[in-house]
Image 1: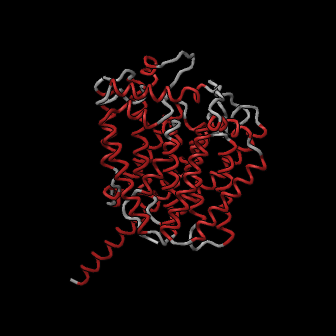
Image 2 (image 1 turned 30 degrees about the vertical axis):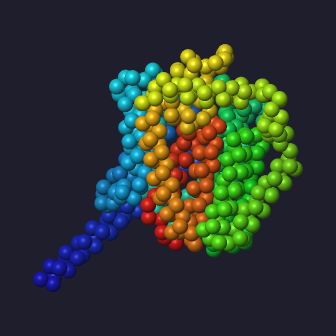
Length: 437
Protein backbone atom coordinates (compact mmCIF):
# COMPACT_ATOMS: atom_id res chain seq x y z
CA UNK A 1 0.00 0.00 0.00
CA UNK A 2 2.84 2.40 0.85
CA UNK A 3 4.44 1.68 -2.51
CA UNK A 4 1.19 2.48 -4.26
CA UNK A 5 0.87 5.74 -2.40
CA UNK A 6 4.48 6.52 -3.24
CA UNK A 7 3.84 5.89 -6.92
CA UNK A 8 0.74 8.08 -6.88
CA UNK A 9 2.59 10.85 -5.08
CA UNK A 10 5.48 10.65 -7.56
CA UNK A 11 3.12 10.74 -10.53
CA UNK A 12 1.41 13.84 -9.10
CA UNK A 13 4.77 15.54 -8.72
CA UNK A 14 5.67 14.72 -12.32
CA UNK A 15 2.30 16.02 -13.56
CA UNK A 16 2.67 19.16 -11.46
CA UNK A 17 6.17 19.73 -12.79
CA UNK A 18 4.90 19.24 -16.32
CA UNK A 19 2.14 21.82 -15.81
CA UNK A 20 4.58 24.26 -14.24
CA UNK A 21 6.95 23.75 -17.14
CA UNK A 22 4.27 24.39 -19.73
CA UNK A 23 3.11 27.44 -17.81
CA UNK A 24 6.60 28.91 -17.54
CA UNK A 25 7.18 28.25 -21.23
CA UNK A 26 4.05 30.10 -22.38
CA UNK A 27 3.45 32.66 -19.62
CA UNK A 28 6.64 34.73 -20.03
CA UNK A 29 6.16 34.76 -23.80
CA UNK A 30 2.63 36.10 -23.46
CA UNK A 31 3.72 38.77 -20.99
CA UNK A 32 6.63 39.77 -23.19
CA UNK A 33 4.45 39.93 -26.29
CA UNK A 34 1.85 42.03 -24.45
CA UNK A 35 4.53 44.49 -23.33
CA UNK A 36 6.00 44.63 -26.83
CA UNK A 37 2.57 45.29 -28.34
CA UNK A 38 1.97 48.24 -26.00
CA UNK A 39 5.33 49.75 -26.97
CA UNK A 40 5.36 48.99 -30.70
CA UNK A 41 1.77 50.05 -31.47
CA UNK A 42 2.53 53.77 -30.98
CA UNK A 43 5.53 53.51 -33.31
CA UNK A 44 3.41 52.76 -36.37
CA UNK A 45 1.56 56.10 -36.14
CA UNK A 46 -0.53 55.00 -33.16
CA UNK A 47 -2.12 52.23 -35.28
CA UNK A 48 -4.61 54.81 -36.57
CA UNK A 49 -4.58 53.42 -40.09
CA UNK A 50 -7.44 50.94 -40.64
CA UNK A 51 -5.09 48.12 -41.61
CA UNK A 52 -2.74 48.80 -38.69
CA UNK A 53 -5.61 48.89 -36.22
CA UNK A 54 -6.85 45.53 -37.50
CA UNK A 55 -3.35 44.10 -37.05
CA UNK A 56 -3.40 45.40 -33.49
CA UNK A 57 -6.81 43.81 -32.86
CA UNK A 58 -5.68 40.51 -34.38
CA UNK A 59 -2.60 40.55 -32.14
CA UNK A 60 -4.82 41.13 -29.11
CA UNK A 61 -6.92 38.09 -29.96
CA UNK A 62 -3.89 35.90 -30.63
CA UNK A 63 -2.51 36.78 -27.21
CA UNK A 64 -5.92 36.14 -25.65
CA UNK A 65 -6.18 32.69 -27.22
CA UNK A 66 -2.65 31.80 -26.09
CA UNK A 67 -3.44 32.95 -22.56
CA UNK A 68 -6.75 31.07 -22.60
CA UNK A 69 -5.06 27.86 -23.77
CA UNK A 70 -2.43 28.24 -21.07
CA UNK A 71 -5.05 28.82 -18.37
CA UNK A 72 -7.10 25.80 -19.44
CA UNK A 73 -3.98 23.63 -19.45
CA UNK A 74 -2.93 24.54 -15.90
CA UNK A 75 -6.47 24.92 -14.62
CA UNK A 76 -6.12 28.58 -13.64
CA UNK A 77 -8.72 30.90 -15.13
CA UNK A 78 -9.55 33.46 -12.43
CA UNK A 79 -11.76 35.95 -14.23
CA UNK A 80 -13.58 36.62 -10.99
CA UNK A 81 -10.59 38.71 -9.87
CA UNK A 82 -11.57 41.45 -12.34
CA UNK A 83 -14.69 43.18 -10.94
CA UNK A 84 -15.28 45.37 -14.01
CA UNK A 85 -15.62 42.38 -16.34
CA UNK A 86 -19.42 42.26 -16.18
CA UNK A 87 -20.13 45.93 -17.01
CA UNK A 88 -17.41 45.88 -19.68
CA UNK A 89 -18.98 42.82 -21.29
CA UNK A 90 -22.42 44.44 -21.17
CA UNK A 91 -21.08 47.56 -22.87
CA UNK A 92 -19.65 45.36 -25.61
CA UNK A 93 -22.96 43.52 -25.92
CA UNK A 94 -24.90 46.79 -26.18
CA UNK A 95 -22.64 48.21 -28.87
CA UNK A 96 -23.00 45.02 -30.94
CA UNK A 97 -26.76 45.56 -31.22
CA UNK A 98 -26.38 48.42 -33.70
CA UNK A 99 -24.56 46.44 -36.39
CA UNK A 100 -26.10 43.03 -35.65
CA UNK A 101 -29.62 44.43 -36.04
CA UNK A 102 -28.65 46.75 -38.89
CA UNK A 103 -29.82 49.93 -37.15
CA UNK A 104 -26.52 51.79 -37.52
CA UNK A 105 -26.30 54.57 -40.10
CA UNK A 106 -22.84 53.29 -41.01
CA UNK A 107 -22.74 49.58 -40.36
CA UNK A 108 -19.17 49.10 -41.56
CA UNK A 109 -17.74 51.78 -39.29
CA UNK A 110 -19.76 50.49 -36.35
CA UNK A 111 -18.59 46.93 -36.87
CA UNK A 112 -14.93 47.93 -37.25
CA UNK A 113 -15.06 50.07 -34.11
CA UNK A 114 -16.77 47.24 -32.21
CA UNK A 115 -14.03 44.84 -33.31
CA UNK A 116 -11.45 47.22 -31.87
CA UNK A 117 -13.32 47.39 -28.57
CA UNK A 118 -13.56 43.61 -28.43
CA UNK A 119 -9.81 43.40 -29.05
CA UNK A 120 -9.11 45.87 -26.25
CA UNK A 121 -11.22 43.82 -23.85
CA UNK A 122 -9.37 40.65 -24.83
CA UNK A 123 -6.01 42.35 -24.28
CA UNK A 124 -7.21 43.73 -20.93
CA UNK A 125 -8.09 40.22 -19.77
CA UNK A 126 -4.66 38.95 -20.74
CA UNK A 127 -2.85 41.79 -18.98
CA UNK A 128 -5.09 41.77 -15.92
CA UNK A 129 -4.39 38.08 -15.36
CA UNK A 130 -0.73 38.03 -16.43
CA UNK A 131 0.89 40.91 -14.52
CA UNK A 132 -0.33 39.70 -11.14
CA UNK A 133 2.82 39.76 -9.00
CA UNK A 134 4.90 42.71 -7.76
CA UNK A 135 7.91 41.63 -9.82
CA UNK A 136 5.90 41.37 -13.03
CA UNK A 137 4.23 44.70 -12.32
CA UNK A 138 7.56 46.43 -11.76
CA UNK A 139 9.03 44.97 -14.94
CA UNK A 140 6.09 46.16 -17.00
CA UNK A 141 6.24 49.62 -15.46
CA UNK A 142 9.99 49.87 -16.10
CA UNK A 143 9.58 48.77 -19.72
CA UNK A 144 6.87 51.35 -20.39
CA UNK A 145 8.82 54.14 -18.67
CA UNK A 146 11.99 53.39 -20.64
CA UNK A 147 10.02 53.19 -23.89
CA UNK A 148 8.39 56.50 -22.99
CA UNK A 149 11.79 58.17 -22.63
CA UNK A 150 12.93 56.82 -25.99
CA UNK A 151 9.77 57.97 -27.79
CA UNK A 152 9.87 61.35 -26.03
CA UNK A 153 13.50 61.95 -27.00
CA UNK A 154 12.67 61.01 -30.58
CA UNK A 155 9.73 63.40 -30.53
CA UNK A 156 11.85 66.27 -29.18
CA UNK A 157 14.62 65.70 -31.73
CA UNK A 158 12.13 65.45 -34.58
CA UNK A 159 10.38 68.60 -33.35
CA UNK A 160 13.62 70.60 -33.26
CA UNK A 161 15.10 69.29 -36.52
CA UNK A 162 12.15 67.91 -38.44
CA UNK A 163 10.53 68.86 -41.73
CA UNK A 164 6.90 68.23 -40.83
CA UNK A 165 7.12 64.52 -41.74
CA UNK A 166 6.92 61.53 -39.42
CA UNK A 167 10.34 59.87 -39.14
CA UNK A 168 11.50 62.68 -41.46
CA UNK A 169 10.10 60.65 -44.37
CA UNK A 170 6.34 60.03 -44.09
CA UNK A 171 4.05 62.84 -45.18
CA UNK A 172 0.66 62.80 -43.38
CA UNK A 173 -2.01 62.14 -46.00
CA UNK A 174 -4.50 64.58 -44.44
CA UNK A 175 -2.13 67.02 -42.81
CA UNK A 176 -1.68 67.41 -39.08
CA UNK A 177 0.71 68.65 -36.44
CA UNK A 178 3.32 65.91 -36.31
CA UNK A 179 5.04 65.09 -33.04
CA UNK A 180 6.97 61.88 -32.50
CA UNK A 181 5.40 58.93 -34.33
CA UNK A 182 1.94 60.54 -34.23
CA UNK A 183 0.23 62.71 -36.83
CA UNK A 184 -1.56 64.59 -34.04
CA UNK A 185 0.43 66.15 -31.20
CA UNK A 186 -2.51 65.68 -28.83
CA UNK A 187 -2.35 61.93 -29.34
CA UNK A 188 1.38 61.91 -28.63
CA UNK A 189 0.58 63.73 -25.40
CA UNK A 190 -2.10 61.14 -24.65
CA UNK A 191 0.47 58.36 -24.68
CA UNK A 192 2.89 60.30 -22.48
CA UNK A 193 0.08 61.02 -20.00
CA UNK A 194 -0.24 57.30 -19.38
CA UNK A 195 3.46 56.66 -18.93
CA UNK A 196 4.68 59.74 -17.03
CA UNK A 197 2.96 58.78 -13.73
CA UNK A 198 4.23 55.22 -14.15
CA UNK A 199 7.81 56.57 -14.08
CA UNK A 200 6.97 58.74 -11.06
CA UNK A 201 5.47 55.70 -9.33
CA UNK A 202 8.75 53.86 -9.86
CA UNK A 203 10.64 56.87 -8.49
CA UNK A 204 8.59 56.76 -5.27
CA UNK A 205 9.25 53.06 -4.56
CA UNK A 206 10.33 52.93 -0.86
CA UNK A 207 13.49 50.83 -1.26
CA UNK A 208 14.93 52.83 -4.16
CA UNK A 209 18.50 54.04 -4.04
CA UNK A 210 19.13 57.76 -4.56
CA UNK A 211 20.43 57.12 -8.08
CA UNK A 212 17.50 54.97 -9.12
CA UNK A 213 14.96 57.41 -7.65
CA UNK A 214 16.29 60.31 -9.66
CA UNK A 215 16.74 58.17 -12.74
CA UNK A 216 12.98 57.59 -12.86
CA UNK A 217 12.31 61.24 -12.00
CA UNK A 218 14.50 62.11 -14.97
CA UNK A 219 12.49 59.78 -17.18
CA UNK A 220 9.27 61.54 -16.15
CA UNK A 221 10.98 64.89 -16.73
CA UNK A 222 11.90 64.02 -20.32
CA UNK A 223 8.39 62.80 -21.14
CA UNK A 224 6.73 65.82 -19.53
CA UNK A 225 9.04 68.17 -21.41
CA UNK A 226 8.02 66.52 -24.66
CA UNK A 227 4.35 67.06 -23.80
CA UNK A 228 4.94 70.76 -23.23
CA UNK A 229 6.98 71.12 -26.40
CA UNK A 230 4.22 69.40 -28.34
CA UNK A 231 2.04 72.42 -27.45
CA UNK A 232 -0.88 70.17 -26.55
CA UNK A 233 -3.08 72.18 -24.20
CA UNK A 234 -5.08 69.13 -23.17
CA UNK A 235 -1.85 67.23 -22.58
CA UNK A 236 -0.40 69.94 -20.34
CA UNK A 237 -3.66 70.09 -18.38
CA UNK A 238 -3.73 66.31 -17.95
CA UNK A 239 -0.12 66.12 -16.78
CA UNK A 240 -0.75 68.94 -14.31
CA UNK A 241 -3.73 67.09 -12.88
CA UNK A 242 -1.70 63.87 -12.66
CA UNK A 243 1.16 65.49 -10.75
CA UNK A 244 -1.22 67.23 -8.35
CA UNK A 245 -3.25 64.09 -7.64
CA UNK A 246 -0.15 61.91 -7.36
CA UNK A 247 1.31 64.33 -4.83
CA UNK A 248 -1.81 64.30 -2.68
CA UNK A 249 -2.31 60.54 -2.87
CA UNK A 250 1.36 59.79 -2.14
CA UNK A 251 1.23 61.84 1.05
CA UNK A 252 -2.23 60.63 2.08
CA UNK A 253 -1.48 56.94 1.64
CA UNK A 254 2.12 56.90 2.83
CA UNK A 255 2.29 59.95 5.07
CA UNK A 256 5.75 60.87 3.81
CA UNK A 257 6.53 64.42 2.80
CA UNK A 258 9.68 63.33 1.03
CA UNK A 259 7.53 61.75 -1.67
CA UNK A 260 5.75 65.05 -2.24
CA UNK A 261 9.01 67.01 -2.26
CA UNK A 262 10.49 64.68 -4.86
CA UNK A 263 7.53 65.09 -7.18
CA UNK A 264 7.48 68.88 -6.76
CA UNK A 265 11.20 69.10 -7.52
CA UNK A 266 10.54 67.13 -10.69
CA UNK A 267 7.82 69.62 -11.65
CA UNK A 268 10.22 72.51 -11.04
CA UNK A 269 12.82 70.85 -13.26
CA UNK A 270 10.25 70.40 -16.01
CA UNK A 271 9.31 74.06 -15.82
CA UNK A 272 12.96 75.14 -15.85
CA UNK A 273 13.86 72.96 -18.82
CA UNK A 274 10.88 74.11 -20.84
CA UNK A 275 11.68 77.74 -20.04
CA UNK A 276 15.24 77.17 -21.24
CA UNK A 277 14.16 75.50 -24.46
CA UNK A 278 11.38 77.99 -25.05
CA UNK A 279 7.95 76.75 -26.02
CA UNK A 280 6.48 79.73 -27.81
CA UNK A 281 3.99 77.49 -29.61
CA UNK A 282 2.39 76.44 -26.33
CA UNK A 283 2.24 80.06 -25.15
CA UNK A 284 0.64 81.06 -28.43
CA UNK A 285 -1.98 78.32 -28.07
CA UNK A 286 -2.68 79.31 -24.45
CA UNK A 287 -3.09 83.01 -25.24
CA UNK A 288 -6.76 82.69 -26.31
CA UNK A 289 -7.53 81.33 -22.83
CA UNK A 290 -6.36 84.54 -21.16
CA UNK A 291 -7.23 86.81 -24.09
CA UNK A 292 -10.68 85.74 -25.34
CA UNK A 293 -10.62 88.36 -28.07
CA UNK A 294 -7.80 86.44 -29.75
CA UNK A 295 -9.50 84.26 -32.33
CA UNK A 296 -7.95 80.88 -33.12
CA UNK A 297 -7.20 80.01 -36.71
CA UNK A 298 -7.40 76.34 -35.85
CA UNK A 299 -10.82 75.07 -36.92
CA UNK A 300 -10.83 72.31 -34.32
CA UNK A 301 -10.16 74.77 -31.50
CA UNK A 302 -12.55 77.34 -32.90
CA UNK A 303 -15.48 74.96 -33.37
CA UNK A 304 -14.93 72.40 -30.61
CA UNK A 305 -17.91 73.70 -28.65
CA UNK A 306 -20.04 73.39 -31.79
CA UNK A 307 -18.99 69.75 -32.03
CA UNK A 308 -19.95 69.17 -28.41
CA UNK A 309 -23.35 70.76 -28.96
CA UNK A 310 -23.73 68.61 -32.05
CA UNK A 311 -23.00 65.47 -30.02
CA UNK A 312 -25.67 66.44 -27.50
CA UNK A 313 -28.14 67.11 -30.30
CA UNK A 314 -27.41 63.69 -31.81
CA UNK A 315 -28.01 62.15 -28.39
CA UNK A 316 -31.32 63.97 -27.99
CA UNK A 317 -32.49 62.45 -31.28
CA UNK A 318 -31.30 58.93 -30.39
CA UNK A 319 -31.42 59.00 -26.60
CA UNK A 320 -32.16 55.34 -25.81
CA UNK A 321 -29.60 53.25 -27.74
CA UNK A 322 -27.57 55.93 -29.48
CA UNK A 323 -26.52 55.88 -33.11
CA UNK A 324 -23.86 53.16 -32.99
CA UNK A 325 -20.10 53.22 -32.65
CA UNK A 326 -18.22 55.18 -35.28
CA UNK A 327 -21.28 57.06 -36.56
CA UNK A 328 -20.58 60.55 -35.22
CA UNK A 329 -19.15 61.64 -38.57
CA UNK A 330 -22.30 60.54 -40.41
CA UNK A 331 -24.76 62.24 -38.06
CA UNK A 332 -22.77 65.40 -37.37
CA UNK A 333 -23.14 66.51 -40.99
CA UNK A 334 -26.87 67.06 -40.45
CA UNK A 335 -26.50 69.07 -37.22
CA UNK A 336 -23.28 70.99 -37.90
CA UNK A 337 -24.04 74.73 -37.52
CA UNK A 338 -21.28 75.98 -39.85
CA UNK A 339 -19.83 75.23 -43.27
CA UNK A 340 -16.52 73.45 -43.69
CA UNK A 341 -14.75 71.34 -46.27
CA UNK A 342 -13.12 69.28 -43.52
CA UNK A 343 -14.48 66.00 -42.18
CA UNK A 344 -15.23 65.85 -38.46
CA UNK A 345 -14.78 62.19 -37.59
CA UNK A 346 -14.95 62.73 -33.82
CA UNK A 347 -16.55 65.11 -31.35
CA UNK A 348 -13.21 65.94 -29.69
CA UNK A 349 -14.83 64.84 -26.45
CA UNK A 350 -14.74 61.09 -25.95
CA UNK A 351 -17.46 61.11 -23.31
CA UNK A 352 -19.99 63.14 -25.27
CA UNK A 353 -19.33 61.01 -28.34
CA UNK A 354 -19.83 57.85 -26.28
CA UNK A 355 -23.13 59.30 -25.04
CA UNK A 356 -24.29 60.10 -28.58
CA UNK A 357 -23.30 56.69 -29.94
CA UNK A 358 -24.57 54.48 -27.09
CA UNK A 359 -27.47 56.46 -25.61
CA UNK A 360 -28.75 56.51 -22.06
CA UNK A 361 -28.23 52.76 -21.67
CA UNK A 362 -24.58 53.13 -22.61
CA UNK A 363 -24.27 56.00 -20.13
CA UNK A 364 -25.60 53.82 -17.33
CA UNK A 365 -23.29 50.95 -18.17
CA UNK A 366 -20.34 53.32 -18.49
CA UNK A 367 -21.00 54.83 -15.07
CA UNK A 368 -21.29 51.33 -13.58
CA UNK A 369 -17.95 50.44 -15.12
CA UNK A 370 -16.26 53.55 -13.74
CA UNK A 371 -17.73 53.16 -10.24
CA UNK A 372 -16.73 49.49 -10.06
CA UNK A 373 -13.21 50.33 -11.17
CA UNK A 374 -12.82 53.25 -8.74
CA UNK A 375 -14.01 51.15 -5.78
CA UNK A 376 -11.52 48.39 -6.52
CA UNK A 377 -8.67 50.81 -7.22
CA UNK A 378 -9.29 52.57 -3.91
CA UNK A 379 -9.18 49.28 -2.03
CA UNK A 380 -6.00 48.21 -3.82
CA UNK A 381 -4.24 51.47 -2.99
CA UNK A 382 -5.21 51.26 0.68
CA UNK A 383 -4.01 47.66 1.02
CA UNK A 384 -0.68 48.37 -0.68
CA UNK A 385 0.00 51.91 0.59
CA UNK A 386 3.27 51.02 2.32
CA UNK A 387 4.70 48.85 -0.46
CA UNK A 388 6.51 49.25 -3.76
CA UNK A 389 3.45 47.76 -5.46
CA UNK A 390 1.32 50.53 -3.99
CA UNK A 391 3.46 53.35 -5.40
CA UNK A 392 3.43 51.82 -8.88
CA UNK A 393 -0.31 51.24 -8.75
CA UNK A 394 -0.77 54.85 -7.62
CA UNK A 395 1.17 56.03 -10.64
CA UNK A 396 -0.86 53.84 -12.98
CA UNK A 397 -4.13 55.10 -11.49
CA UNK A 398 -3.04 58.72 -11.92
CA UNK A 399 -2.07 58.01 -15.53
CA UNK A 400 -5.53 56.63 -16.25
CA UNK A 401 -7.10 59.66 -14.55
CA UNK A 402 -5.08 62.11 -16.62
CA UNK A 403 -5.95 60.25 -19.80
CA UNK A 404 -9.65 60.55 -18.95
CA UNK A 405 -9.26 64.27 -18.19
CA UNK A 406 -7.75 64.77 -21.65
CA UNK A 407 -10.69 62.76 -23.02
CA UNK A 408 -12.94 65.77 -22.36
CA UNK A 409 -10.96 67.76 -24.93
CA UNK A 410 -9.91 65.23 -27.55
CA UNK A 411 -10.42 61.68 -28.81
CA UNK A 412 -7.47 59.65 -27.50
CA UNK A 413 -9.82 56.76 -26.74
CA UNK A 414 -10.24 56.42 -30.52
CA UNK A 415 -6.48 56.16 -31.12
CA UNK A 416 -5.90 52.38 -31.04
CA UNK A 417 -2.38 52.43 -29.57
CA UNK A 418 -3.39 54.81 -26.79
CA UNK A 419 -6.66 53.00 -26.09
CA UNK A 420 -4.84 49.67 -25.83
CA UNK A 421 -2.36 51.11 -23.33
CA UNK A 422 -5.16 52.62 -21.28
CA UNK A 423 -7.27 49.48 -21.01
CA UNK A 424 -4.25 47.38 -20.05
CA UNK A 425 -3.17 49.76 -17.28
CA UNK A 426 -6.76 50.22 -16.11
CA UNK A 427 -7.28 46.45 -16.00
CA UNK A 428 -4.12 45.93 -13.96
CA UNK A 429 -4.81 48.63 -11.37
CA UNK A 430 -8.47 47.61 -10.96
CA UNK A 431 -7.70 43.91 -10.60
CA UNK A 432 -8.97 42.52 -7.28
CA UNK A 433 -6.43 41.19 -4.81
CA UNK A 434 -3.46 43.56 -4.91
CA UNK A 435 -2.15 43.14 -1.39
CA UNK A 436 1.37 41.80 -1.86
CA UNK A 437 4.61 43.53 -1.10
